[in-house]
Length: 145
DNA sequence: GCCAACGTTGGC
DNA sequence: GCCAACGTTGGC
Image (cartoon, rainbow, N blue to C red):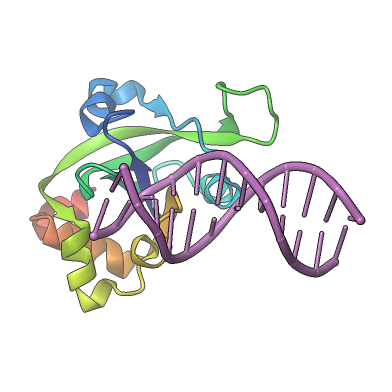
């Protein structure tokens, strides 16, 4: 299993909207960046990710899973662009902010800190566990995810 | 709203 | 294939 981070501006596509889609999930469309696309191509079904609010909020608010492998992005005719589908799993009991992440030396290597412009990023397992812990997730729930 | 960092485009 | 110009992203 691999871990990821999906960034969205909440006034365009928020965690609330994502949750409203339920199990059906939602195409993560609109990505026009090769690195981000390549990350999506590398995803497997069931991979987990953080849902992060950029621009406003600046915090990881929930956990999603990859519910469909990379496929053509329906919002463009350009064949280069692909995306996965994701579905909301759970809220983080308490959002983990950019400030929190920057203040934690264990997260100093996070892509979010070092390449803040990348909208779909890989997260290491150690980072995943650390951010979940900071978000108030207890070990039991974490294991079930 | 500003601006630094980054990615892409296109002329040469 | 280099690199200047431009556009966009996203933290602040």
